[in-house]
Image 1 (cartoon, rainbow over the protein chains, first blue to last red):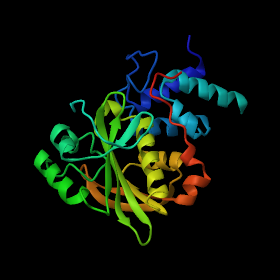
Image 2: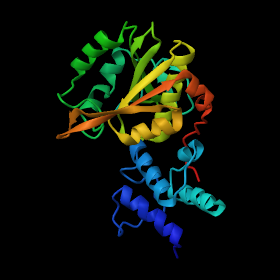
Image 3: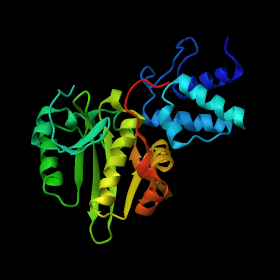
Image 4: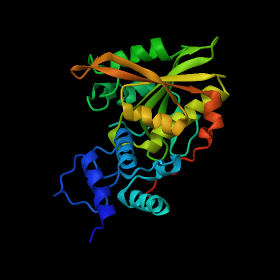
Amino acid sequence: MENELEKRIRGIIREVFEISEDETNEEYSMDNVDLWDSMGHMKLLVALEQDFGIKFDIDELIEMVNYSKIKEIIEGKTKST
Amino acid sequence: MSEKMKFNVFIKGKNVDLVVLDEEAVEKTEWYNWFNDEENTEYMQQHYYPNTRAKQLAFYKSEIENNPKKLQVGIFHNEDKVLIGVISLNNIDYLHRNCSTGTIIGIKKYRKVIYFLEAYKLLIKHAFEQLNMNKLSEGALSKDIADLLIKTLGFKSEGVRRKELYKNGEYIDVHLMGLLKEDFYNHGCDKIEIPPDKPMG
């Protein structure tokens, strides 16, 4: 069962990359989402930063190439704030 | 699709090398055709007229070969042995020690942040450490690309040229950025670790 944080992250990913809700994909990643290229990556990170009120550093920006990693990083940041 | 071919490496990287472009690169890769792709060129001053191999060869001969004001190299995926893009220093000014930059990753599946950043980092270091440049400038048609360069490589925003260019049916802004040598090194941008390209997480 998805928790609120997971729903928010998935919702933002779907919105940025124009993925419909019925397209179920447990592991959104750069390799399987059509619009997730370099520019899409920045769109996503800016949207996540704004929604969660956090900032990602360069290493995080490079690492966040799939849903699991994004969730892990955001969980770490939101726990510590 | 570009066939696998061998290039002379100019600057060695982890996932991508910057390689020497020559006439064979024009003849044997899809380099010229990247500029005919609407998606590739959505945020570039390209795709106004069709490009051909002959035009690309003429461009290579007049603008790249033996042109001291331009340094253009290929972005070569060193595992897949494929030319995935090109990157350049343009308008190199040896008096004021500045130049502008430009890049395209022409094959969609390679349009990933790590390749983009690695190619930029390699070329920027070359500009500062070998060509003794003091400043690089960039004008991005995409705010997202501007954000990426500012956030990762130390570029600073230098304003917006409002409705500067006509593209896709409208006049669009150009986001200006500059990178001083001191900013690149003081912020540790030269030490950004580019991970090897493998599934992460």
